[in-house]
Image (cartoon, rainbow, N blue to C red; front, top):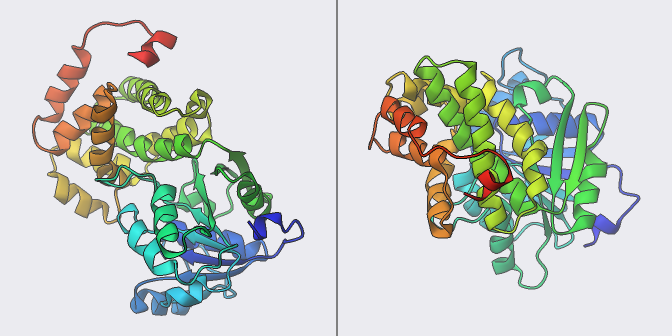
Amino acid sequence: MGNAEMGGLTCAKVGVLGSGAWGLALARLFSRQGHDVTVWSESAEVVARLEGSRTIPLPGNPELPREIKLTTEVSEACADKDVVVFVTSSRFVRSMAACAAEWVRPDAVLVCATKGLEEGSMDTMTEVIADEMSKARPGSAPAVVALSGPSHAEEVAFDMPTAIVAASEDEAAALLVQRLFSNEVLRVYTSSDVRGVELCGAIKNVIALACGIARGLGYGDNSSAALVTRGVAEMRRLGTALGCDPETFFGLACTGDLVVTAGSLHSRNLRCGKLIGSGVPVEEARAQVGAVVEGLNALPAVIELSRKLGVEMPICDMVDRVVSGQIGPEDATELLMGRELKPEGPEAYEE
């Protein structure tokens, strides 16, 4: 675990795989901390536009430092880098990891800033990356760290104070990421419960869709508070069934990220859900949002995993039934409110 043991490493070579708003916000942050940053995009047109404007395509046009290098070559973004950060859509993490595998150093630290679960395998994003790396270099795959928590790109890009979690089974790798990327505007905590942190990052997007649907129906703060609170209960039930630390579900990766995603107009999942709740067809709602809606991507795997483990997740189930067209949003509300009455407390997490 070469780099993680390099206590003196303060200025790192960082590759960022993904040129969306979140990837560029992270790249800007890393560059302003003095790291040597290269951003990869699959689109030459995007690279040309970013080179010309040197701004991140967000309201207010935050500056993209000129020190940041832009490329369409995966090799340029990965070769000889101390840290490689994956910030693509969850559906492209596996193919991205497969492309990057031949270029990353065995002692590099891989950071996944994408939240989601892979449909079919039900793997978390770090598991997807680790799988592809192991295929390419059996026995010498780099360490992988999940970076998660309440972190809207729209705020990180303007240096608004943010706290997130670096989670990995490799403690040295998590500590390296914490030390390299913490500064006066970003506070990084560490966790060894990588699966718990990643489950939170995926499922909170589904709960945010539910909150958006409720808003689209005209419901208010009471409904959102109920969905957020009971959503945490669902996430904790699934996580503990998988052996995750129950405390993770009260931390930044769960409660913190869910509050942000379910309550902010920056949230794509909330906006998409609001459109669906107001009667807009799902694919049209996705198109109107105009960006990746990770809650829709994660939903099939969340439902499959809950059924496989026999874990009751009524909110996620109702979102799935609405999105798939089985029932309307009003029917979902009636079904949720008409469920068997139960206690709240520790036993409620074990339903």
